[in-house]
Image (cartoon, rainbow, N blue to C red; front, top):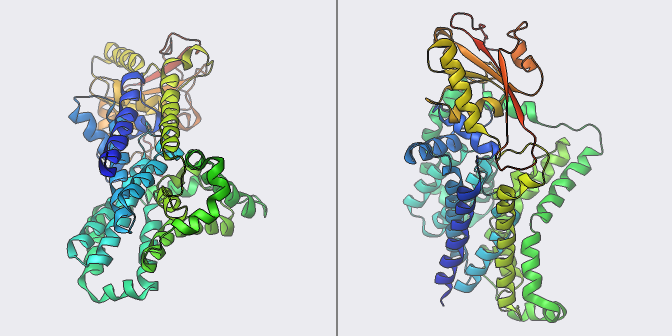
Length: 501
């Protein structure tokens, strides 16, 4: 079998399985997916937490599937597939052989980010093909100088910034590379980089206008969620924690390497590597090392300088070159005495993670005694609340206020998909037309035993108490305790003003 065919079969099968397993077994989507559906229903140019791309794509999947909620699983699988394609093409452009490109793909696929988190389609996962594609198009632009590659790079950079501002780290890495190295700097005297920047800037104009109109809402949210240093130790501990987490996320890659080497390979590794490692052109070596190492170095330095704790999952797109690095500097697969054993190990790792996903969906309710996201009886709850509203008011439920999980699931599953008035805040829900809410009324929802809503809602309705409550059994017929849902009906004309703050 040829390497391209092997890569197509391996990548295609695992992407298909990571889409099929949650589609067929997850009763309801995970948190980030539900949240994205709630945002996407409004089709705004930005949302509380992130720019809009993830939410837009989820909304598109909802409409294409006739109201299906499984689109996020397939979007994640598509992200992985495009990531593998770009990794393959970049590996070949950097001078690796077909079989080296195949192993680069395999080794990348067993890093943690490409396995268990896959069903939770979010901006981190969406960044995977963006980072891999931008690095590829930048290399092509430098190598061929074609205007089309620079245009694609600019468009993909804008797409990335519409996904998550973290892509700015890669944009900065590209820009610094262009300025530092003479063979890249010469392109500044050609139209390519300037057209690239212009395309990116023009595509970003609508989102930048939205940011200005909402007082930079997403940036405010990011600042509010940052974890500043509590003391000097955090300047050392937090970057080391981030680095340790990224090393741990490469455990699958390390296991595959060890399986392929075996004891024999380990004993002879140094001598065989030196004999088998054919040099790449210096600029290709430099390119690979620059994009593999610099983004991580910047994050670690930023964490050390500020003492801030960075989310470990931010590393998701940063390691699309990990497999390529291993292949290049361990002279694989030439060095391996046992390549078949390595492949079997990679397949076994994928099977284990897929089994874990299946177990979460099917077996977890039978042993877990805490509430879970994917077994939440969202459909039954939403239908009941919509029915209560209809019986009380004679109209369809149009607006629901509450915390993210309680309100977003009603937005996703209730008939007509009511709008989410997140925490009853117009700042956090800039799409809300308060005049229309006054005209149609509002339902407040919350979970738990309290007869009053959460504090953020109570600030607008200090005397409100629940009008009703009902307990619902979790899906899966297991040991997970019932969830109690409470609601209050705010009739038309009595909705609190909820000024923007």
